[in-house]
Length: 362
Image (cartoon, rainbow, N blue to C red; front, side, top):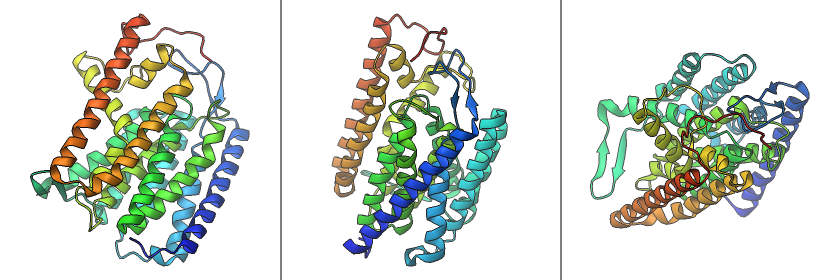
């Protein structure tokens, strides 16, 4: 465990409260700037609504990391990737904010994501091995860099893809990063502990403006930044010396959104649909279109993420058979969720998951 006293921990929480207020102030300024999201047939809203509120999450998180780097003892980390993560996160946020305003082509955004992912990789933040049940440590060798690059880019986009209903992405991020911070505290991961707290604070500062009713949307600037930070923190978590299979902490926390994205990509590929084309065929979107309350969709994701956070504490101490059982249990739960959504879709007469006609939305 990190050498953090209760007094110091209370100080950390007080600092996070300041960051949450900072996030809220930035969100209010963005609302006043009136960068509008005009609805179309794929939208889950019916009135033009401000977007780009994720800038509050970005400013709060990066401000916390910069203060930590400049002032706190726990920031005196030998690993040079600390500043590279700050730079990569800032680059993702800057281009995503511009994209919110000007709508860049997908491949331009992808190129920036690759560059941002390459920054911490270039400074040594690489997933060079995986610890698997019954197998032990598996060195990734020459695959280490491409696997790390794919992971960061995939999660960056995955959190962007699930930012389609009020509170879903930001709320999931707040729960996941909060649990990750506490787990990192118990495992001695100072960078992951601090970054997790700051990301949680930034997300909580934004959330009241987006849930249950939305005065502003997160926008790509927030969702892509959240995905990027959680992805890099997963790789950093793999360096917890006392933890076996610790890279899988973040995938466990993000199991539902990652499953949704992977399931949707596979389904669309099998159906011969264009994978980069906009659609409304994600599981959470189909569940919404089936008539399930939108607040309920977000709460399902928050609750599942919290359940995975509780499971993650147990996961660290499990034997290989126990870890395998947990994997199977999570996979089974997510499979049942997909079947439930499919059943609701059939009852609602939704035949083409990816296509939806315009309708009145609340």
